[in-house]
Image 1 (cartoon, rainbow, N blue to C red):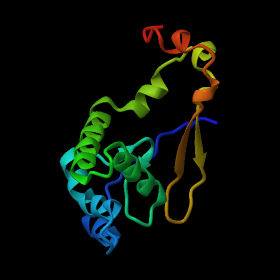
Image 2: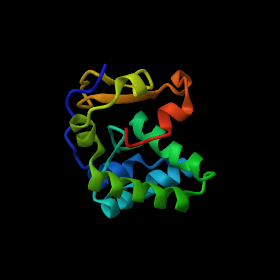
Image 3: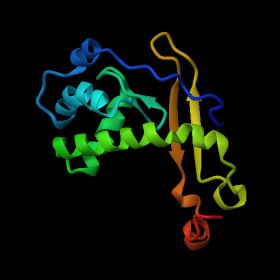
Image 4: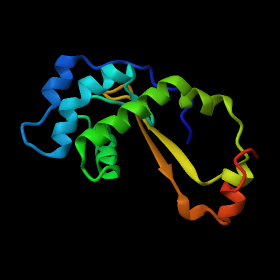
Length: 148
């Protein structure tokens, strides 16, 4: 299924984010401790349909862990990369682009999905994206010409 409506953007308060920092000294807890500054610097808190929140919010943990893994657990590098990604998302607004853009379903159909889980007491909704890279039959045909 596809998301029909983008979640409203909300900024977690610094107090909520400060409480989220785990007391241990792992790269993830260190990046969580940096999250208020990251969100403030980027002036944006959404990535891949996830509104960044606190350590109790599993999707936020997953996002931060992806940036840490991409940077071999180097917290300053992960922080810098996340800030730039958030700034780009604020500027480009890819969620809106997705709603406005028509995709060639013959070429790109079946390569990815968006799952929206219903509203819970704590969160407006949870969004998970699934990329099915094994579904690509011909890499050159699928990714060779980005203008088609």
